[in-house]
Image: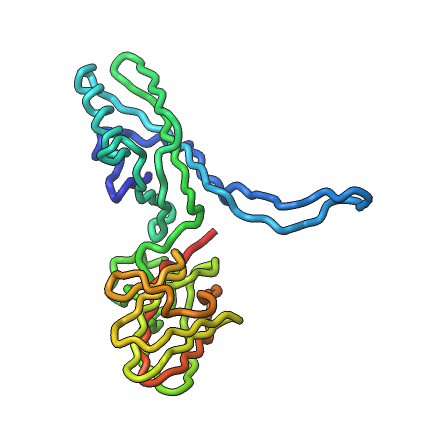
Length: 260
């Protein structure tokens, strides 16, 4: 069973056929160069590409007009108001604590047989990693999370520091992430460093939002990249020692744990 934006297939009058395509890994892009006179190739590493899904469905409806109406309603759900594929949250029942952000990929061909319509929905996750159901800072003992989920109970993501202090930030995922940080300091510039990378924010009277995923720095919703010098930090899987330097610094971290 799957859900699309938390709707079960039955919401659309669909039956999910269990034999489906869910790859263990995304596509891999190898980066290599052939150099004349050198055996083999020069390896520049590899990168993950997109992740494809192919999900089979059937719809049983004895009224052919009602069958067509339901199919059009499904297509409308998959598209935005301009008729373009929109981002949808895809969850599998055998991994209910994780989701993929997917879009419809390709056309929908339906095979009509008597009172039944059968077809495949192809989706693509351009960001190929699975994400945990809720962001790390929102996990609490009473959170609506499956009991078999693997996460650290009691982990902290909001801190107040003074001078130079090292804090511990836990990434329960299997992939490094660039977090969003909300930072304020009353009297000084702030330097944040972790895992060999660091950045400094000039003094600001307001809360500064540093978004590592999208490489933005904002104050009150206004782009303020000029406040920052250095590199966006990364949080590796497991415990991360993050050093904060500044006077009366309030800092909080927000990110989704991600999995290959």
